[in-house]
Image 1 (tube, rainbow, N blue to C red):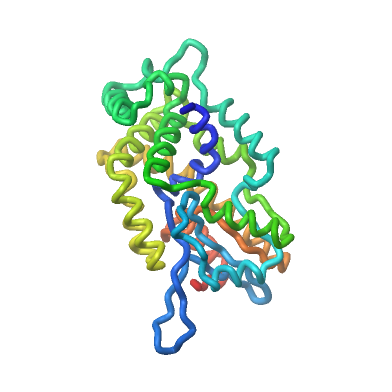
Image 2 (image 1 turned 60 degrees about the horizontal axis):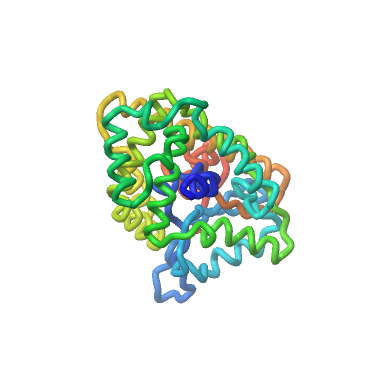
Length: 317
């Protein structure tokens, strides 16, 4: 059962570090009454001299309290001809490919076990967590470290009452079908899974990622509370500060490993997303783009910063 949970959630988890790094961002009420201060949303308008697109930070896991969305967001979607998402998970063939790719890259080689390759300082906390959640440790034994991390994180998020089927990306995919809008995938399934699959069984990065996730699970409640507060307030700074909780393990080696993970999961993908958005603008296509919120935060290699460097006007709505 746990393997099924892990593989089912892999396509969302690759956008996460987002969920730990990106459980959040979106809404916030807006008033046209001049007596009220206009509130911002995690929605941006990106423009060149003669065209524009909308870029929304997605909450991949949510609950009913996130809905209904504000009219500012809904109207931007209605004004767009197409929806662009990371991967079109409303397509059955895509979901099937996700399962195939995940199982292909997540499993350890024959004769190897997770318990046999993990160092004691990772195996001990993982075993303790499995016991506290009443999960047989052997259920993880055929998974690579990165896949075990994703599986445990998915379970932890479920325990908090959040649901991938209520995610903002899923909501807009449903709306796109209902309104007859075209759907564009910014990435392939293989690209998404490969972002994590590069963390091999003996790879120190994969081990570090699992260690980091075990640390994050211990503070998941407070992290999510921070993301939700930032999302509701439209507060980029608070969201970024909450992300800093993600990797707080400390030494110089950890810092280098963290950088490699961030490059794989964020920066390399951000560059490709920014290139796709630039093409939409060159083609004068009015596209509503939904990507994980963590891809939009920060001044180093975020999608928004990369678009600003290309000379586009970026306006928060």
